[in-house]
Image (cartoon, rainbow, N blue to C red; front, side):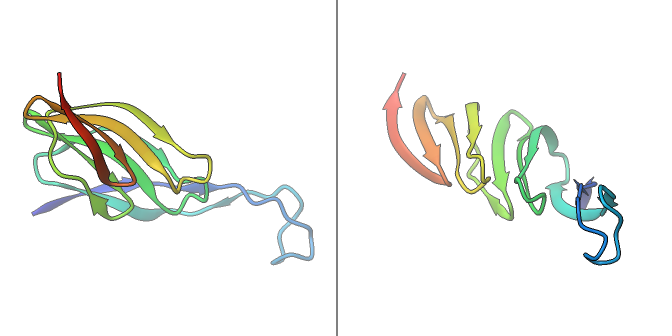
Length: 116
């Protein structure tokens, strides 16, 4: 069973009076489901893409960690550090360790794997 992880995305739309019938500076609020967490998982950190259409989050399940970018879930890691998201939200990188090996993870691809 999947527990729903609901995030309300708020998008501010500044438009001209002629655009979609809104007044200048009017704010549009939209609520939609952006992600789900597996049963027993806990969200530790989350960030939105700049367009507000997807969420990037770090979750824990027991002693392990995993990262979700949009709908893509990473493998389980022992530890994660140093999250960076590009300004346009398209590139996500972080450090992760599994079985005493550290990886730089960029857009879901592991690089390195040195022991520490």
